[in-house]
Amino acid sequence: MTSARLAPWVCLLVCMLSVLESESVDVTNTMVKNAVERGAVCLDGSPPVYAIDRGRGEAADNWVIYLEGGGWCATEAECLFRTTKDIGSSRRWQTEKSSLIAMLSDRKSENPYFHHWTRVYVRYCDGSSYVGDREKPFVGNNTTVYFRGARVFNAIIEDLLAQGMKSASNALLTGCSAGGLGALLQCDNFRSMLPESAKVKCAADAGFFIDGTDIYGGHLHREHFAQIVQTHESQKNLPKSCTSKMNASLCMLPQNFVADIQTPVFVVNSVYDTWQIENILMPMNKDQPAVHDQFVSCGHDMENCTCDQVVHWRCFQSEFYQALGKLNSSARNGMFINACASHCQTQKQETWYGSSISKLRDSSSGPLQGVGQAVGEWFVNDATIRMVDYKTQSPRVCEYNPEEPHWNNHYVFRGLDLLLKKFALADEIRRKARLVPQCPAQVPAYRQESYYSGLGYLVGEINQTSNWTDWFINPPRD
Image (cartoon, rainbow, N blue to C red; front, side, top):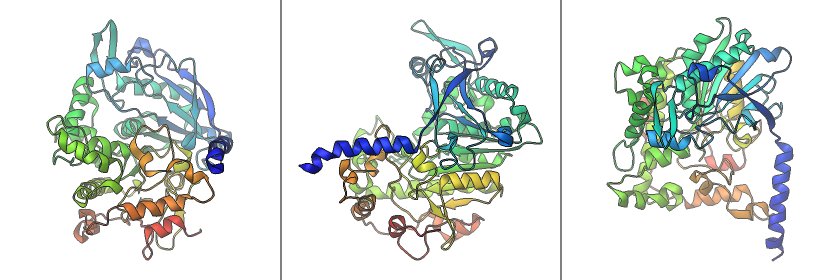
């Protein structure tokens, strides 16, 4: 009874301490000048906006441009609906501030590599990952809907060049989810707009969407991306090296164009990315609802799976690693791939920097490396970073976000028990390890010798000698 009465107060205390420890920078948003006149507008016709926090000292000439995520609208009706939301309109952001945290934090302890750079957070409002360019708008319910993502991106970058980015020494284009995909799609264009003397790279967080096989044995997501391309008329802004070889809708998927990007790129992703599990592995199929219903419990928490269902997870994991092989076209490219049940790890402090939970080791004796350190070393010091956790075969506990709409909370903290003295994060991890079905071992394609040796890079592993769960609970010290 005493524990039950104390739990809410313990929770409040933890939340207060969390706020004190990781305080965001609240920045007034800037409207892009002359955007409306140029037709570079959000879905509802409002001008695009961004939040900018100037760097300090010599680092002020170093820029991080972060593209916000928010999925896509695949039909005119979906885009019309978005005009009433923040992901389709800038009207609310014209009067309210944006909070800069994690990769955009101004605190050295939270963001050691980029905290003193000029940091820009671009609000997402076009629904196409910045590649749509349809001249004729759609009118529905007395509302005009525009499809101008490519123009929006160019207008934002040109505005930032006028704000001082034309003198940039270093520039990193990055983003999360649909923004991460946008960073890859616009990477070489971004490079062309910056000074030749500038060091320019691109990084995508949770934006490496794969052409994976779903639980029905097909690729339902292809229909979704085809609708996006058709509605926004995106084909003209997709990589020509890809569209010349295959259907334009497949050129929204990075594995089909990433090898042709000339600018160095870095991919941060989980093989168990929550959005991809829900929408690529287990999308709703109106023709086979029973198959979906049978998989829902398993898809939301692997501990509920039968061994036959676990095969779908293993195959998806294998396809993900095979898709990553396309990133190996240049030694300048990098990656940090873990098994967190997560989506967007660069915009949450607990997964960006400072937590041992989402860190990998670059060898059995090398130092621990987290997302923030990996991206920072890759950009600032031009380090070769190819960190991949290929041993973990189940989603891992890496974060706690009660407002996260995805199912990753099934893999995180169980109620308030973790706040009490007798229950710890390690207990939750051990519980998960025990409950995940002990299914027959399989050798995914990416572990087969012929494929593995062909990748041509060192795949980082957690530990060559001990169980991953043991490492996770008691990580070796640097």
